[in-house]
Image (cartoon, rainbow, N blue to C red; front, side, top):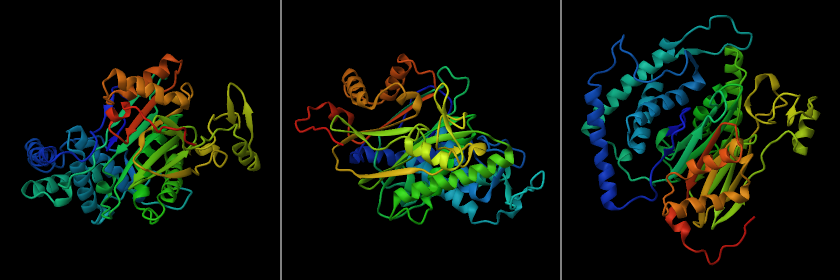
Length: 433
């Protein structure tokens, strides 16, 4: 999994398809060499006073937050050491699962003051992180002798081009997730391949966006409806993540919020979910396919919903909820609930193999680049780069800046076909609704 940092460098994932036998053999050889190198650098478990090799997620975690935060911690550490993504996901899952099967009461940490709400067990994040790294070391030591089959099975390779910049803002509040190895990270063993991609656009701070980028997919992975109703699982995951973050926001006095959009490719079906004005579009045979309608305060149904709750929508420099927020749905925004809703909308669409790519982006991009111009911009880049899509997101971000965007900008392009194939003339391309 790649999750975003405030850096402006392009972040690109893997190539397409499952690869030739020679390529798969090369990837299989990467596993023992990676484990050998990691264990050379970390020849023993961490000592009680040893510094942790990766940043700890805060000081306290609720029981519900533990799996998502520890998976993020493990994946961040392993990705920083260039672990093959399937191996990183398998290692993270095994280490986190082993830790969750133990008695976590030793990590219990009492809050500094009594809470007015129902008590929630809080756990020491640093202690959990230290225990996680010790288990990760044990798993790597075991797998150095014999790597499990699951970590050696060739996975579908995805080409994902991502670029994110702070732009003219003081802070970078966007976050994104690229998780092709969704099943491996959460130990899902059914026959449906799944890959997850998301962009979160924070406001009032980065806490909500960072939280959503860690927890939405972790919650979705364990929803009982995921196998039969993936869109419903995503909808529930947004709602649950909002509820979890609101509790954290009250406890830690956080006021931030985040819009978000995610895409889950499950087998031959695309499922998208969104809150607010972050958006995803599908391009199929060179034609832009509209998948969603963003939530904005001026949308009549959103305005009606807000007014029915006793709030109002007014126009200042733009349309705002209760004269403050320019978004009508978001995770967080504790002081604007329930007017700013945490209920996501979803859509699903069968994939036929003729789809070109998905483009997920925040409003810093879509406010200045109309949907109908996306395909032309991407094609122009591919022509100039002889069919290479590795840096297409970077060029799309540059186009948004040139058109006057001063906001944070995040663009993610998930190719569903080999980019070079998109330059072949389409004889049967027709506009699609």
